[in-house]
Amino acid sequence: MAISIDTVYQKVLALANKEQRGYITPQEFNLFANQAQNEIFEQYFYDINQFSRVHGNDIAYSDMLSVLDEKVQIFEAISLVPFVAAAFGLGSYDITGSIGDLYRINMITYVDTSVSPNPIIFEKVTEKEFVMRQGSPLTKASPLRPIYANTAGGVLTPAFISVVPSAITVSYIRKPKKVQWGYFVINDKALYDSNPLKTTNFELHPSDESELVYRILAFAGVTLQKPELIQLAGTAVGGQIQQEKR
Image 1: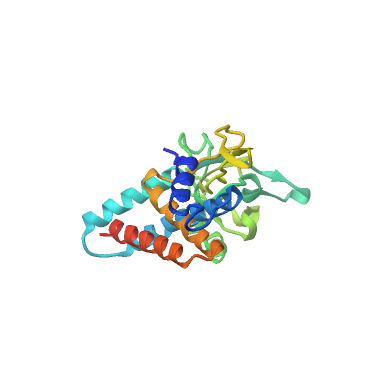
Image 2 (image 1 turned 90 degrees about the vertical axis):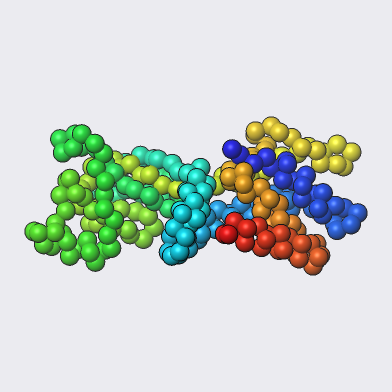
């Protein structure tokens, strides 16, 4: 489902060619491409939040949420994070340290067959709620209903997790991989190199290809100081967004 970075590059060059609107170097393109991919990726979650709160045509909004969910699924991942013991009985689960591409956590679970044959889901609470619930016999967490509170830096400590297993499983949304248009130079001309060691395609949904092209064009327009390029890209992106939200 990946979007070919070379296809996007050729479309961008066709719209901003050297004779008419300036030349975009491979280095500039790679910089713009990653910025564009990150912006579209971030927009997924903004749109999910917006469509989830809008009242009206439930069928239409459900369809949009289904499309957005399909786009986000590309970035769903799972990782095992071990408990690292420290002195004086302390220790932690360093989630951000263990998961370098973490964007946001979906769910945290652990396995204890003496409690349940299925993975047990942690409930996320605030630090205040954690302290209050653990202080009351009626609301105190149990091994079957564990809780945790987010702490700074994505590190869970025994002070803010009600059960401390040897490892936890983190289901999360990862960040998109950095894209790269690989090339080699012949007679001062950059030619595409599809070698996976040099080239990395976009991970976004195929339906986002056109938006990628125009967002990259907008960045190029700023660098090349070509207002008409910025206007062309802005109009195209705006029109596409309006069409998607109909």
